[in-house]
Length: 415
Image (cartoon, rainbow, N blue to C red):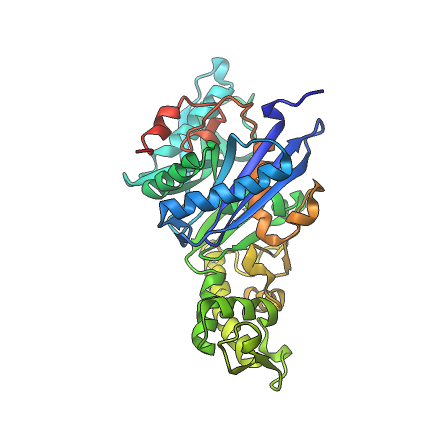
């Protein structure tokens, strides 16, 4: 039986250091097979924001071509991640009078009350990405997950609203379009990672997802199944590399290679006598470095990032209070000793994230925590299907899932 375009979902994670593309084929049982994976280095973004259009387009194209070759199909449309320190999550409430006959709450009322949360004052240079409803209240009776069918006069919703910079969104969408791909949906990268790396039980009892990218670290706290808080910390693993380059007086390329091969977040686990011969990484280098000193440099920066994560948890009264602890993902989560440092700093159970669903296909290619967001984009596409109806306005896609006629909206971004 021949497959049509709607049988495939494509996720493109445009990160500060790499672009990762995953092509998946949908199965009948709400699962999928990974049939194509592509990755390309990206050095044209700063903290998740595009600073060089041409280079970003080239990185997206290179990642796409690799995934297309492996999958054997052309990619025409994709769900794309959006990250960066311009993204901000806030909590908002919406209130409406119930309009249904006999005061019964209908889907229309639910859509209207979610729409009412937009009243939160957003500066003109901000674009709403997601409105995630958490709990509803009907006539003062709170804690309701699904109000449809209940009777009352007044309906309220407590929602988490995620917004980003309009210019950052325009620049990213322009790059994706010029790489020849239509955007099906834009998804905050931290939110996408929660779809792939958190189990239903973790989301229910309370968990913090900590996605350590190259330029930024996303923190998303999920409790009772819903997003309670989201924040982006403007530090990531590239800051660690920069510190190593300064500390060892070497180039960024050597610092990155040394960090990957010998890096450790816990200096106490490293002998003072262990040395690193830098000439093995670059013939021009003629010095040796102490492994313990390297670990001290890494520990200082990773502790700073984790203390900022702790600060975010403190802001919402969840410091040391999440039973499912912290799940560490992203390329920066691969540093040796990070789990131990996280347990110590956050005072929470901590572990490196692994996909919370069973994956099939080219699983070995994406078993790395650096693919958390791109796998999450695929799952997001399964959970929020748009049935190939075309473009979706990032400002409304998370609200109703209704397709918007916004090809024109995106065209304004293209010169």
